[in-house]
Image 1 (cartoon, helix red, strand yellow):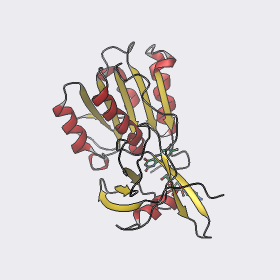
Image 2 (cartoon, protein in one colour):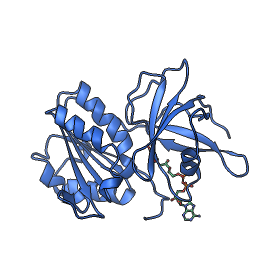
Image 3 (cartoon, helix red, strand yellow):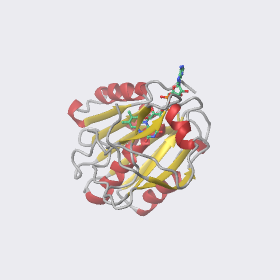
Length: 237
Ligand SMILES: Cc1cc2nc3c(=O)[nH]c(=O)nc-3n(C[C@H](O)[C@H](O)[C@H](O)COP(=O)(O)OP(=O)(O)OC[C@H]3O[C@@H](n4cnc5c(N)ncnc54)[C@H](O)[C@@H]3O)c2cc1C
């Protein structure tokens, strides 16, 4: 059954990595009021003309008529290929924002652990944390290769501009001067004190499960860990 949607127009498209594009969509006269970490669902038509939906988490902050979505293209993916085929001026209907992932305590140190496009809600939350919170903002971001790290320029700029913000990249598919392997193997190396921060974890389900287990081993209270897993149906690359 079709859901209620907001009409938006695609204003710009920008390649972030070989597989991920950023889409700026604007709803003239509408104010997107949401909590960073929430998502909208993009409505698209399947081959039979039926309305279908996929969730995407804005990387932008609320309070304007524009959303910024970062969407990875899966070769056979229904919605992601549809989105990557859109051009400026096209209509992109989206549902109103919803979802439970959000910053629990802006004034507490926060560690954001993301892989791939799991960065999107955490990017919005980390930006909010940096601007409204009192605590330190730490981001641990896992990807396969340097060229697949999205928003690296922005994250490095935030880190260079704010003493309270730090970012660590972990690459699983390439040797480089930085950290290698999986994000969950680097938790204790990047965090001085695991007893106080809140941990927000988003990415492929295996990473989310293993990160929770590692945090438990490090005696992080379960109530300090907030997670979202996705790409459940995605094929391994
Ligand atoms: C809360 C939430 C927020 C999200 N936010 C984002 C975001 O900000 N950015 C983002 O990029 N993604 C995000 N996602 C993931 C997104 O919703 C979609 O799951 C993703 O874009 C894939 O959708 P699709 O329609 O392109 O692929 P689908 O058609 O659903 O296919 C998914 C994968 O399965 C493979 N596949 C399809 N059919 C088959 C088959 N018959 N056999 C084997 N494999 C098959 C496809 O190749 C593809 O790799 C989010 C998910 C959630 C739950």
